View 1 (cartoon, rainbow, N blue to C red):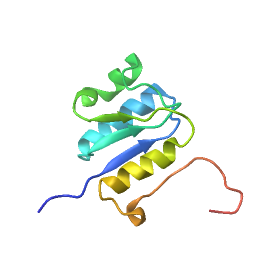
View 2 (view 1 turned 60 degrees about the vertical axis):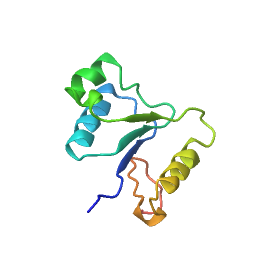
View 3 (view 1 turned 90 degrees about the vertical axis):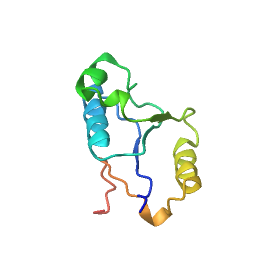
View 4 (view 1 turned 180 degrees about the horizontal axis):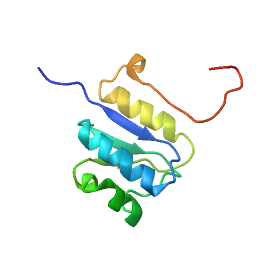
Length: 100
């Protein structure tokens, strides 16, 4: 039985230590690829590489350029990979103001 693809998308995550830690988590979770949207830290930043502890070489990274429409491109890419929209989840630190 083949596992469905599993992608992690980073949107504007700028702390290299956090990017490296997420890369380690991606490697441990057998993520298909890490997708970087614009304004995210470069995975080859020395601090990100150090924090990733080798995961930088085990997890494919897809960088989407162009601020306008980058998230739409990412979602289109997931759709092309056969990932249904009801299988896409998001987390944010931003307060929507409506309790969500």
